[in-house]
Length: 102
Image (cartoon, rainbow, N blue to C red; front, side, top):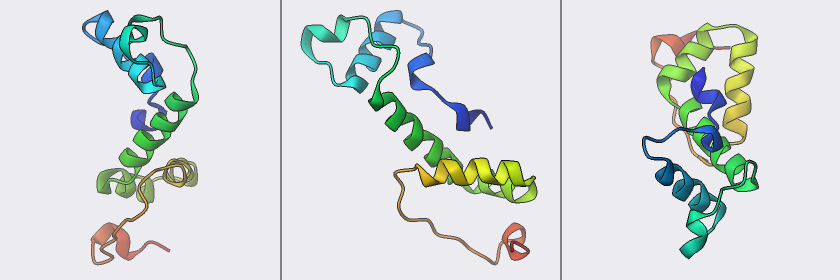
């Protein structure tokens, strides 16, 4: 479930300068601007967060957990998948956890 709430803009790094450079790279800053204080919010953070959440949500263990969970859990996964950058998924409906999926 933590993977569905990832926020790169709030991530920690062992070296603060690395965190600053990474966030500035995400927003498109280059050169000396890599050392600027990164913005707290940016559309690129949102796009990357959605892509990462969708990637995690598309893994078999997460989908299996969601299929066995309640409707709220399933809908959280579906929401993450709807914003993902992954466009193809393959399902093997012979897997036990998928056989009874309706």
